[in-house]
Image 1 (cartoon, rainbow, N blue to C red):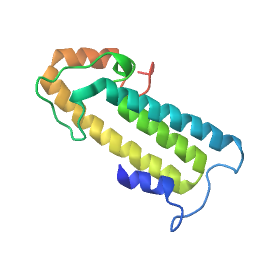
Image 2 (image 1 turned 180 degrees about the vertical axis):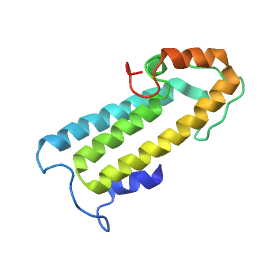
Image 3 (image 1 turned 30 degrees about the vertical axis):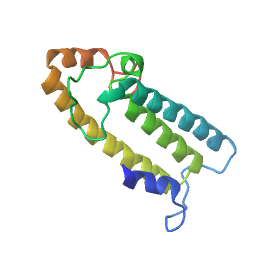
Length: 142
């Protein structure tokens, strides 16, 4: 994921080719998405509380959280980070930033696969039912 964030912010040594025209609107839309994404990720992190971990692991007496942002998507921290990264890519408008967004997306996808496997093994049918009811990343999109 760190590899993906590098081209979002680093300007020197990376191609400056653009995928968006230079206008005033894209940085504004990008800023709004970045703020919304970071806010959603922070809300999810706070709501998850002691069950959060940077590594894919279960905590002692782990519970399945289905409230707060977890009622809208199963992986709201990734939703928020991806939204913020997309906003940053829009604000920057460069192909390097777009490639960074793709790298972050791949990293999230890999981590989601590992988390889904761990949670399915631990919670069984309860997690499978949660998967049927709640989308992974995009609210209201199954």
